[in-house]
Length: 252
Ligand SMILES: [Zn+2]
Ligand SMILES: [Zn+2]
Image (cartoon, rainbow, N blue to C red; front, side, top):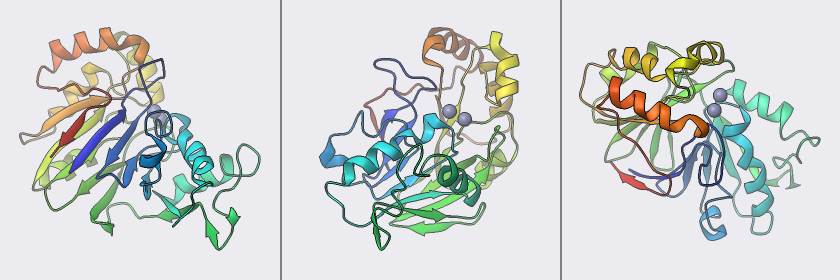
């Protein structure tokens, strides 16, 4: 599986993009940094957007990608997530108030975007990837993704506080090569992390003790303004955690 890191941060600054992973060239997981990082020729290759949850930092470029694709429409781009998350996007983003409803434009029979709900814990095969969502512990309906192709399986936690199910799934998944997991705040902001349902390095240490196998773990969704502090704490508490950089391509 080829994963290009377009954005991996929990807040935006120059050089620090919001969460967005290009997978096998035709999928993106979360839409935080599509149009600001990819040339238009690559944007046109995107066929599916896997959405973890409807917070703005994960969906904003659905709007701007749809706007760009109007000039070169082909098959609709699938917006894949839980029905609950897609309903929120429909009601609050693509509602002809905040942004045009590109699921009906340029005409309802040939739209730019198409909703594609999938059920949790039920693997779906889409365009060469087996995709399974798992509910996690965040303040709005949120799912982690377990993605498999013919080479490997990779998990993205999405934004989450402490949770059990992703670890149970990870422990029984053969060929799991990597886990990408939220660590948004430093330890001193544990209270905010608990209220907003994110992890700190201390929380992450407790979480990864639930994993009973040797898998590469990458942290993401760090708040850009707090990154030095988070990295220092991760080094002390979870030295096995690996860092990722925007622009980097990982092969699993
Ligand atoms: Zn969130
Ligand atoms: Zn987020």
